[in-house]
Image 1 (cartoon, rainbow, N blue to C red):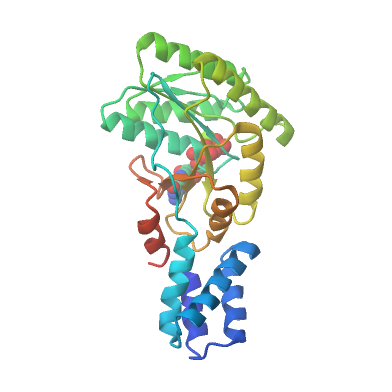
Image 2: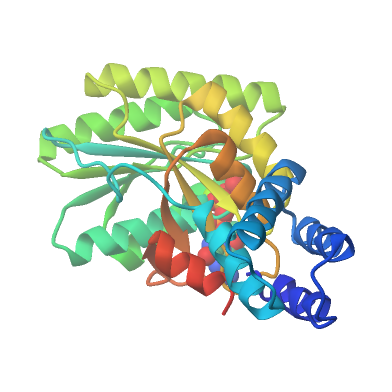
Length: 290
Ligand SMILES: Nc1nc2c(ncn2[C@@H]2O[C@H](COP(=O)(O)OP(=O)(O)OP(=O)(O)O)[C@@H](O)[C@H]2O)c(=O)[nH]1
Ligand SMILES: [Mg+2]
């Protein structure tokens, strides 16, 4: 995803001298790949310090240092992977604006859990559009899992509540709940998510085990605003970064992670059910420059 950035860096470093103009050009390259200005400044400060302290004189060595400065932004603490509850069902809510890949990611997670032998139920909580319910049902069929649904326009929180009750009654281990990314207004969307979170807690006797904010890697700086809003109304516990296949941008994701410190749990690398990966910071950092 930073391939273009690295090409630019190669060109900039090709001049062979480390001077202020070089840092300005590196900053420009970072900003063009959607890196937030504060993040870019931090990265370049770190680079300047490293160049000074490690007495780096070669632009090639500087490039390696820049890579590790970017990779360091993604370093995470705490356990990786999704939380699994002691008491079934484990419930994951998927939230995010329209088109980011919520429904597709649910299908991918369902497929993964099924392959590991777990029982899964999907909740068609995006009741805003009839097509959204149908789309989830198609994915459910493909992944071999049932879907709890209601009429379009019905209460989203109620569908998710019903799915939790059904999972309890049938001894199903995981409930994956879709939510709407689109509403009459943003205020309405956020209010609905607050209600979904509250009703889930009521039905489950605890907060949802994960509230996963799905972000499209092509989003740019808007990703920060999305993270802000969804964190406020839905208590996000993890990020899923989608569409990491074939994007030249993605610098904004550095900013989201740095600012909110919400762990990145999964990444989407395509449109098929198999196209889901665990987030491994080191591997991921390496792939940024591939
Ligand atoms: N290339 C690629 N495409 C993806 C990925 N994840 C999702 N998509 C595509 O993105 C589009 C939107 O995906 P959906 O899962 O419908 O997104 P959504 O968030 O549920 O959208 P709404 O229901 O409209 O809010 C679809 O065409 C997906 O195939 C990914 O990791 N890579
Ligand atoms: Mg959807």
